[in-house]
Length: 134
Image 1 (cartoon, rainbow, N blue to C red):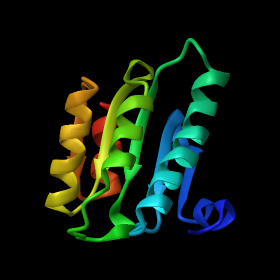
Image 2: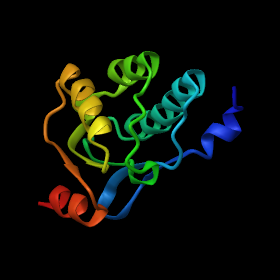
Image 3: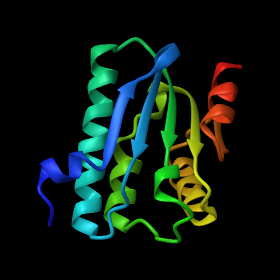
Image 4: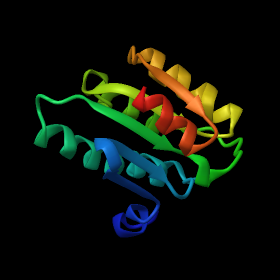
């Protein structure tokens, strides 16, 4: 299992241009324990933004493009963690960048389970940002 410091290097969460909250996944975790820890650390950073702005909803951009057209399927524990902790009520629009049909399908099921609305998938950041800004 990787250390938290190593896992922290596999993603970035930041408030980008036009106050769009962005999460970029830089590296896929194939070990299920590392994958769960990545979910916990990433959502922890995301929740910090929510807590600092309790009355605000965010546009959210998730960039999975650095992981490529992977056919890797996320483990059950990480999926459950995202499903239980994402806080859809804090999100106005969610744009997801990925070229992987497998990842797109998996994310769709997780987001349906939490009843997330206003979601769209894109293959480029430019398209995703244009949609969010509409």
